[in-house]
Length: 137
Image 1: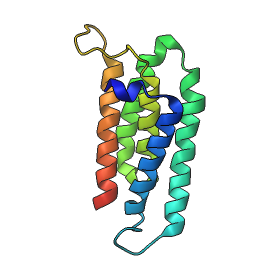
Image 2 (image 1 turned 45 degrees about the vertical axis):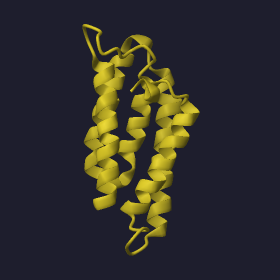
Image 3 (image 1 turned 180 degrees about the horizontal axis):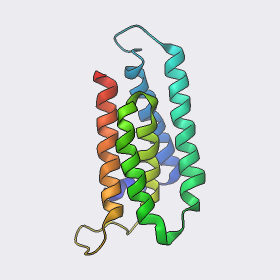
Image 4 (image 1 turned 60 degrees about the horizontal axis):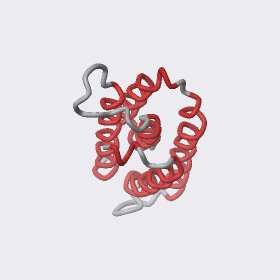
């Protein structure tokens, strides 16, 4: 899990943009169905734009003392937006969650509040669920 949270912002953007593009290929039936190229391009661009806004503008402005709460909230948002998996929002919120979980925030043996770890786990789960829903959806 620490690999996700230690990844540089630009690398996270590139990786999650690729995930969005591939997931939207399936969600818009470019692969194995009636092709909706306009929907694929539009939803991919929308998801990437929201992700860039969250990762490059919103997350850097979060105060260090509220970072854990933000990480949990973004992870929950990623999971909730799985209801609209085709919108690419779960991937955008997941990327923001991974970036907001500062290195050193999550130690499995640590006692006390573990909202950063919970947020990252929820975001990872949301990424997998949303991707699977795009494929079978």
